[in-house]
Amino acid sequence: RLGDPIEQRVSTVGRVTPELVDRIVDPTTGRECAIGTEGEVCVKGPSLMLGYYKQPEATADKIRDGWLHTGDMGVKDAQGYLRITGRLSDMIIVGGFNTYPAEIENFYLRHPKILDVSIVGVPDPVLGEVVMAFVIPKAGASLTAQEIRDFAKDQIANFKIPKYVEIVSEFPLTGSGKVQKFKQKAWAVETYGLSAPV
Image (tube, rainbow, N blue to C red):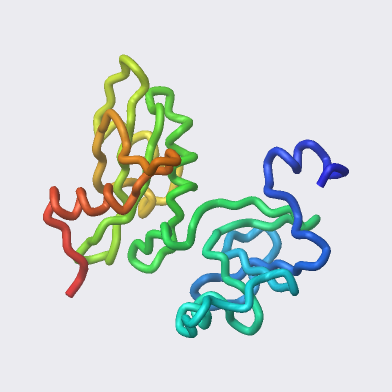
């Protein structure tokens, strides 16, 4: 909104319009999260869709008790400003711990030799999933997988440190420039022969 402070306008997606109500819920329990806690963004109001045409199962999955579950992960502050942090479908569950790629990516973008990074979850026979990093180094920079892991020690939780690291020159992208993480994950599964618990 035009009257919002500039710092809120540039660091958040703003607040919902007056006819809508939003809330952040824990994607596992469905319970509303405390202010400042990350969860799935849900919205309710008269301007939202009623459902998917002739798709009752898809509708039931997305709309529960009148709330549209957007699939976006976010954090809402006490003034109602919302910051999107990622997609629920990108969430990695490492031994029961929810891990969000955007958080790890933002951490690694502080590394002086990293130009870009893409984090995906890959199957693990013990933990269900583990973190994998695809890293594009800055021009002329030399990086090793161990250097990338060491950068994170004592900085982020151990389960968020990538078990697998690939140094690459580019990411597979869509026509609009979004990273095709599903292709990265498929490549990792095939290349490393990874499989989930049986």
